[in-house]
Amino acid sequence: MAIKKKGLGRGLGALGLESPKEIFEPQSSQKDHGEEAGARLTELSVDQLRPGKYQPRTHMDPESIASLSASIKSQGLMSPLIVRSVGEGMWEIIAGERRFRAAKLAGLTKVPVIIREVPDKKALSLSLIENIQREGLNPIEEANGMSRLMREFDMTQDQVAEVLGKSRPAVANTLRLLKLTPEVQNLLMSEKIDMGHARALLPLKEADQIALANEVVAKGWSVRETERQVAALLSDDKKKPAKTVHKKGRDVIRIEESLSDTLGAEVKLASETREKGRIVIRYSSLDQLDGLLEKLGYTS
Image 1 (tube, rainbow, N blue to C red):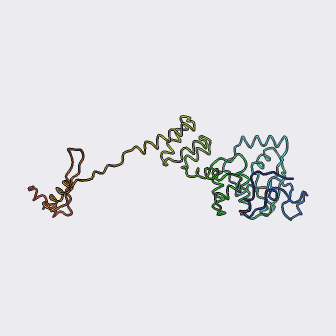
Image 2 (cartoon, helix red, strand yellow):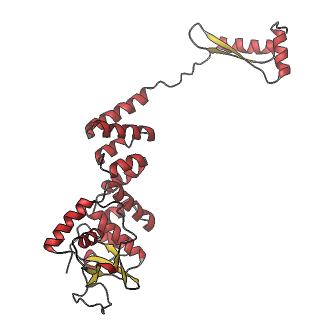
Image 3 (cartoon, rainbow, N blue to C red):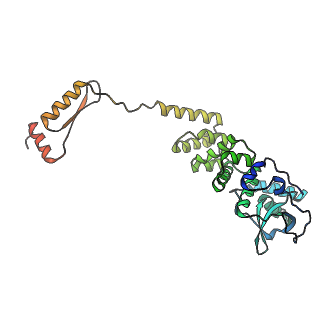
């Protein structure tokens, strides 16, 4: 029984994995627990299965599960789960947790499985690849899955793109979503904003990201309107005048030096307008202050 997977190419070699055919097609069609060589197709009780610890999904839509369950009830489970033994008669799901949940909901007591004897590294990569390639992962889950492939397997973006059958720019754009603030990521995961909105918000500072994302939700902005608002905000930031530093003329410097010599303390002239300003006299001790007051004619 073969399960066709799109996009899994030579890049699996970067993970030390086999070809897609070897991963998803059992080496024997015999439904026999006694055959240990390679992948085996068999049936297991749903009570013997448990969710995989490398599942990248953080949310599974109940309506989607219910719809899949109705299909399974009508047509049966066409695609077997991929599992591995974890001892004591239990099996961990590497790929197919949505199908597992839907099958249980449909009342199935046994499900078809492909048993793979794989170590943790391969279990992680298979689970991530299977889930990333299937529709339904939200963009942040997908980005976290890609990031995990890079982090745990020291892969480059090019290698991730090859493994997942995506273009490198697509991988790069998805990974950039992890630079959004957690608040904005949550809005994206809950589908209150979409990928277009999220990408438009990326150039903004964190506080501006959050503020504008909330505006998108409250006012129902389109992606184009969001891009316009972001551009306006960035333009306003550029137009903010930089603090003006006036270069002092020679006459001003000469007056400062003369006053400093006369008073025995540092004196600075600070212009505020063309005709107004401040004289700043600095002292470093109370004794120096007393001397300044005396020279200025002040008596207590």
